[in-house]
Image 1 (cartoon, helix red, strand yellow):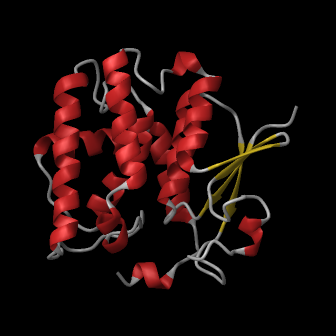
Image 2: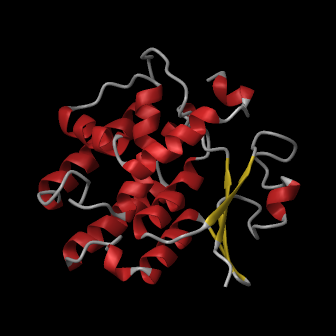
Image 3: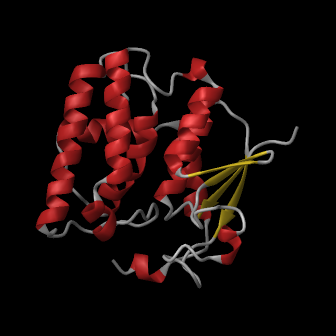
Length: 222
């Protein structure tokens, strides 16, 4: 049987692609990847022709497993967790698992201001800037969440819930955003992001992002 194929966007820019990619890597699931350069005709409207051909939503990521097509980051991460239960992408403790799901879901549905004004741009580094109130509120909420989870569930290791989890896959792109735009964060949050930055799978993604030649000028201008 052929390997699953994960269709993703540029590794420098596509935060939603990074999330299931990390989950699959951490689960130890072998897969192939196909990268689509974003930013051209149809971008932002779910109408990039090549992506429409492989994803029912017209967006990346999408995972093809034989005839099965799974779209959306969280759905793909859930599939990975089910395929490899021993990887514990969801924590073993029922309480920790519930909060891990809550944290991942909050990232999946929230933080719109942070995504709007501080899009993922792995290669880029800028000076600190003054943020609008809604962005500052998002950053404060991220810090609050990370501090709570680390204090309550992170005693067994350096990730949010001790070991790697789907929550880490969902917040890893946030760490890159904070680094890119020079955002100062509290010590607990910075230690957590440093853990992400030295994770081997994250570093593999980062190296590929740095090697890409594609650009999205409107994102680079922010």
